[in-house]
Image 1 (cartoon, helix red, strand yellow):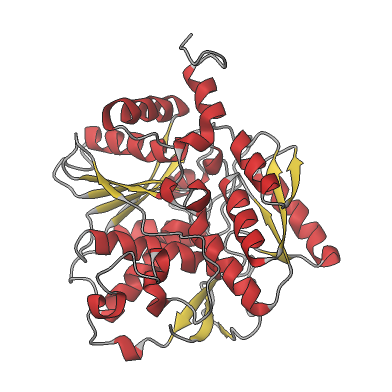
Image 2 (tube, rainbow, N blue to C red):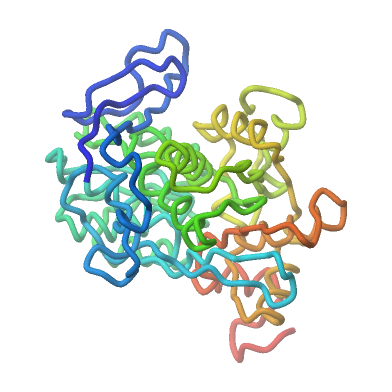
Amino acid sequence: MPAIAYLECSRCHARLPADVPQTLCTQCTDQPAGALYVRYDLAHLHGSSPREVVGEDASSPWSGMWRYRAVLPEVAPVTLGEGWTPMLRSKRHGGVFLKEEGANPTGSFKARGLALAVTMARHYGLRKLAIPSAGNAAGALAAYAAAADIEAHIFMPRDVPLANAVEAAAYGAKVTLVDGVISDCARIVGERKQAEGWFDISTLKEPFRVEGKKTMGYELVEQLGWEYPDAVFYPTGGGVGLIGMWKAFEELERLGWVRPGKRPRMFAIQSSGCAPVVQAFEEGASASRMWQDPATAASGLRVPKAYGDYIILDILRASGGQAVAVSDEAIFASLRDWAANEGIFLSPEGAAATAAYDQLLASGVLSASDRVVLFNTGAGLKYTDVVAAALGLASAGHTAR
């Protein structure tokens, strides 16, 4: 496992030390301050093959996302078995692979980022962590904080899927339900963290959630034979996974672990009821505006403004990708379609990706021969109350109305 060389600002490229906990760049003259990237000295890995470093056996003691420990911080992990999720090939679309992140602990991709963030919090001796969450990050922080014997203070919208509130409380976190959306929760954390002694572990306001999420990029490349797909569809609220995967692709190329070729086109998928990144992309803007009155049943996509929107937009344009909005009606139609015809119960966010794929295939942006990875970011069973309401299913007897 490599030592961290330094932390680098994504805006001004200033270098900060990693021997103490850091949040955002302290050197930026413009606001908002830049999110920080973790940088390593990887010179000792140059010339090595990925199989020499990662190994062939995905079930070894260093399993899951920690099989990539050669490109993660040198630290004892807090782990619940996160990572190495299935790559499922669609039976109807020959070029489509579904990355099933619902197989992670706590049932979502959030396990990756919070496993690394909590690991580093324990390493730094932090005792109280706080997070605003649209749902799944709350359960993940609560679980890993419990495993690490750290206090977790969680703020979620009152109307999150029931499973999110239940699991966070069951893990022993201190949960506050807020009348509003995730930006309102973030405001409360920001106002209270100094007085309460909380370390803010919000999306991109510390550098290690990106490091956990970048393992999705390493995995999908390894699972495709150390080759890039043509495109990646990523349901985008805060967008940390998309940012992390792009960082992984950069590292893979520096290490020579991926065959030469064009990186995947990256597609950020949002709901038409909350699509600030789509709006900014279509306007040619460098950052998004706060989305007014966000409304979507895909709770993870109900993020009025992502802190890392400027990074997301840069990645979309550099990759030749797009930001795509789909309606809630299309989301739930696709969810039902994949359940009935593929045997996969998608989360609403994951169904946004499958719906967007159908939309871009029909419009000619993609061809059926393109090799595409679609991310299902969470287990559909975590959304049974939301899906039941959307599909008009009776609460008793489990029969359609």
